[in-house]
Image 1 (spheres, helix red, strand yellow):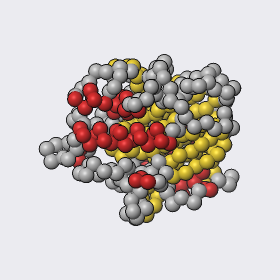
Image 2 (cartoon, helix red, strand yellow):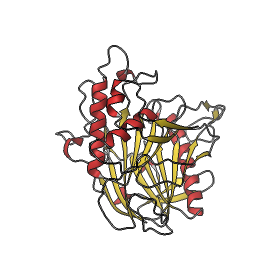
Image 3 (cartoon, one colour):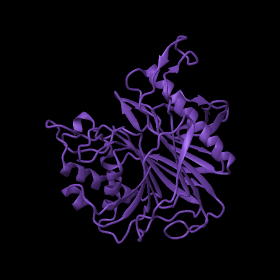
Length: 374
């Protein structure tokens, strides 16, 4: 399903205030796909006629941010919100939503990355509001290309804001029509079955540089990048059961990376994988892990191996490295950092998670900021 949204058409008073101009945005909503099969979408639309200045670096470099925003809902009740965001007892308001939008957009402008990959964004309306809030007080927007994907009926999806025009967006989803026999999975007895839960899709964006497809021209002639954005099944509930589905999602990603490399693309994959680095299969190649596919494994590099950061997420006072960047092919990670500055962490150094009751904080995850060279 493809959807073109006129952002000047408000749903409520807040939308009227947030949307400062009529900017057509083409947004992508997930199509249900067969196991390991992708649904292709094309014809991305430019969401601005202007451009912001941005930090110059090597002409062959890109800066990418990956961040789980922690339940970024708007103020409109659609019936799929989490409990703390809906109902008479909720402290969630339009004013708090607007404040949270402005806080996010201030971060984006300050970091000024080329591409932002966000997890836990509610819907296309939130994506519109982010796009329009970004252009407040400036002559135009720098992140002109916006993509969104979400499983049908789920509460949250993933969004990408990019300075560069993707040549394609494909969304990959698991769709097991019946219960899955689990005798092949470690820890399960023969005959046990498991029904598929709701899971987020895998986004695959492909870029071909050298066709002047950025705001100020581009010199990366003949260089191609496949960017994957993932948000794997959480560990809530049964850890053993949820690991089955993360294994399935790993197989999807592994297969797609293998195909992208065969097609001549360098690969970057990012997102919230809900899996510690130590829980992946370590490769014989130093600084790498092996992603397990249906028949083969794909070796990818992880910047966590050379990072001194404790992690990007802290659960019960234990730091976790469950948010990742992975690389394969002709691409180098120039720099990698966990954003721990200013108000993003508490006085004790923990992630300053968002609090619906007070309207303060950012997220229970810290942003990952990476610069790569193609």
